[in-house]
Image 1: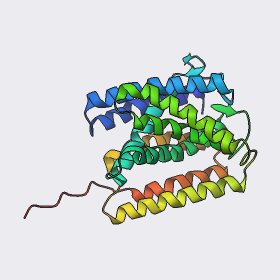
Image 2: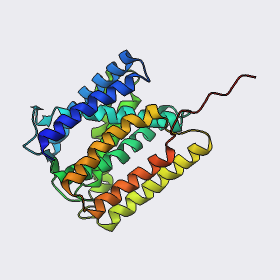
Image 3: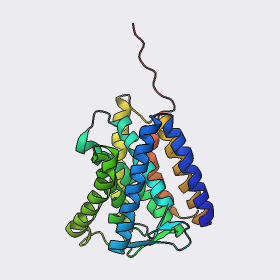
Image 4: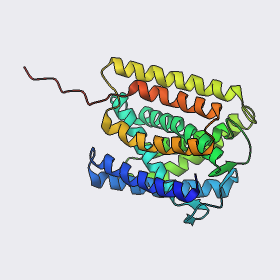
Length: 270
């Protein structure tokens, strides 16, 4: 898929997703969170690219600021906001740090698919290999950011907590773990890690379903838009890649298990 077409489709997905989200939550509150997340995402991404030199974007991207395509900080806030809705739907009783950790885990799970497809399509590249061309710490980076952003007590704080905790977690996990192990071409090891995570996500989805919880259309419709964009990117880039389709399936199954085709009816008063 030409980069210009991907950029145009991405703009459409951003606009449509915001419109769908605005139907389920106060538009003013949504706008405040989105703007704060976008600013924080740009700050975090620009500082990571400049500070670590671990990855970089293809030169074909348009409208950059400090080396970061402006579409990137416009897209990732929707991933974070969507993950928060997933956690709210499946575990509404969870609050505080535990909620932020679940949001971060959902974002990292989603980011795993975004990363491997985008890297295969040549949208960006990493300085060392990993799972399908992406080091594991790279997959976790946006999850770290989402953890910090979700901990913010109000939208204005996201610009601080998101990038700051992302950097702390990236450096901490790198020097404590990823610097020494699970590096290089991971091959089956990468799928083993993903398989364990996908099984845990599936178990969570099934347990939530048994308690009458699930992803209602207001939650899963915005996610479908983004998913279809990356499926289209995969189909136009490498449609015969069994590893990429296997990764896509492992990410998709837990969400399919958690999906409700319609919102549950409220109990009748008797």
